[in-house]
Length: 501
Ligand code: GLN
Image (cartoon, rainbow, N blue to C red; front, side, top):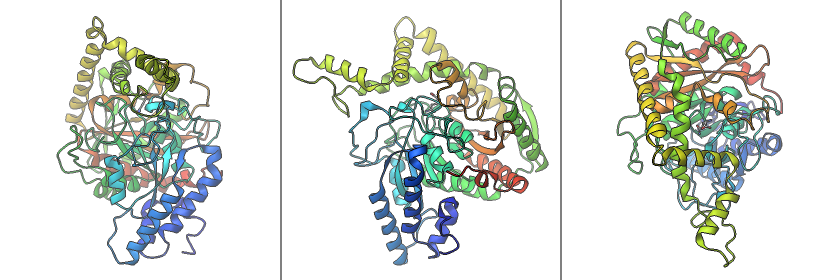
């Protein structure tokens, strides 16, 4: 349609879907506009590892055909999406940002992809990520870093920096991420976008290449709370192929986003998150948002979660332990890369050469830490203790949620840092996850949403909302209310002030 032309890439997914259903624009036009945008900006952003131009156009045409035939379509039908390269899609390269998977084309769809397809969402391509989702900056991708569209010299967060950057650069209105310790929420925070880690077991992990199976969770990403809710509803729900999938009704996330009302809710400020070590502008925007929530009728109280202090240490033992076991399957025999197989070497030598060549430094570091933490003699001291801490953190949440409906904190301690700043300092990199990790350890649901730009650097700041297991709808109720109030205050600042690429 004429009024939308040229501006299609800046529209919300829900607006595009509606315009498509009403015949104002075709899915093919929407999809082409996004492919053109990718062609014009992605050499600078590098959000995508693979763009599926032909497949995307043919899926879009199929949606258009079905619409023309009068078929009923879902609320996001015909809208394009960027998929993190850690989820399988039949016949499409899935590298997880690693050389070790180069050339592997999975023979099956992940459940997430299956559900996207049945909702008629158009998959544009696979997005860049830290290798096997280990990292907070996307600099650990074997295929080069993704650049933050707000400042191309800065990181877009990680591990799902590609998905978040694709949204912020208007290359896609919807994206899928995965969150093991913050990989959906921290990239959302530093790119001014919305991301949700659903309750553990809320979205199927079938076809998600495992990092740490007890923590991993796929989730929805978009530029608005409502678009995120619509996507959440598409991908969530019980899946018999994932033994940890929850057999229960998906909370009404779309209804909650629409209600967007915090009156009478109790909101807890976590004393242990958001103080010292957090950038001044991050704290300022966070405090303003808390004041807005109070104005909107929520009751805000301070809550203490004393064991959160140990979350980072516990996570960086549990994650490497599980990862060292999960990544054992990349041995050069079954998937992707095989090194040194010239007939002169034993199987063990080929495996060792493949792993040596195929894994990057961060992955090797974590495999070694994990193997050490699980070895007999050290198991109780490291892995065992970390699991006990995990229980204490879960108890902190349970106690807090007896008093409040949701908890809030800044999502990340700082705005986007410069590419290169932390890549050689693993501890500095790990500290980015300080506020996001407790949720993964306990299996709760959490959202990051943009709350403005930090005064000192003009870069986006994110606020995190945390809810009890299977109360994902509360994230959208609170997030929707806060987003509407912020738009009233600042207009669509995050869209209007986004840098022109
Ligand atoms: N930054 C965290 C890590 O490096 C988060 C990873 C994730 O959520 N996939 O482990």
